[in-house]
Length: 295
Image 1 (cartoon, rainbow, N blue to C red):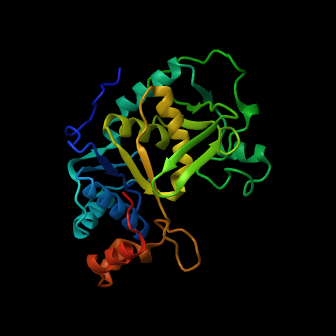
Image 2 (cartoon, rainbow, N blue to C red):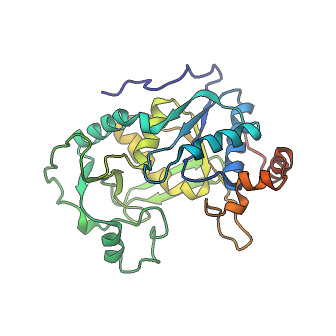
């Protein structure tokens, strides 16, 4: 059973607003993170709310303690304030497992032995088609178990993948604070998605939903590359019986070739820019002129 306020560091402010920063310690923060975190901080400040810090450290192969100390130092240098303590996803596995059990009991998930390569091969065009360039390609309906098929029992931190079965043909719509009305059709724009991995870890989708619900996040501020993930997460909120927060997806920062920034762009990392003599005021001023957070 999930405790309603599991992991909650403090009551929600009287203003009713709580946001969060959610860096993943798999590399150094770059300008794209800075813009998103600055917008999140400004929105929390304007609403006199809290801003929590969640460390998304579930990728055991790539996460490093040095990157955690690095983003903490960068946030301090940028004077982006957040309310302690820092939440580490790696310490919250029982909460994610409890949510998976609820999804299993409700018949929302099924075991999956298919690899990403299998899915791409079935689509017949690894670099084309809806959803193929997203973090998860559209899962072929032919790979699903038959409707009504009995699902095997969960075992402790099961050694197999589990997917959420999306309601094919349902149109999902939400109002995004940064991008306006967003719509997608389940089964066409996105397919059955991972909620638990065979390495014993929850997917980003499940962990984020559990944390945002149990930490009573009222608004999620993140990059526009995660809009499609929001549709998946809305289905999880509904299946788990939780209210979804509001969403604000920020424009992406791109390099001189129009490619969105990633952690491989080390020359544009906050760490490298600091070493080159950049100041917080100069970096933040450029974003303040470019993006004025809406109410």
